[in-house]
Length: 136
Image 1 (cartoon, rainbow, N blue to C red):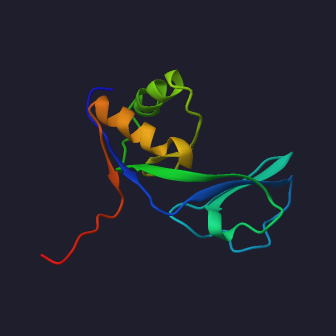
Image 2: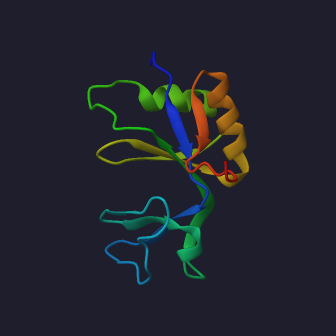
């Protein structure tokens, strides 16, 4: 990967929830900066805002969502490998999801700052998804 990428860090923590195969969530899972549901024969996986997950659910999180600024062209090769290899070397586990336009990287909240610093050292831009500031 030759061009630097821009990663947007979303402030609202998300969760990765596991349900039994074929089960639909009974809560409003279409929340947060990213929501997704995936069905397989053996499980249903849900990504949604951490605050939406009901008590007692089998969950990983809180996770911080990083969105790669897109849209990314389907012919672009090595985007995720270029971003994830340095994290793997540091022992940072991730969950990657793709939408039609871009890729998302979910990282445990305790490692989010370290991931941002790593990406910046590698020449990428990593910043809050929404910049805030006082009146000008």
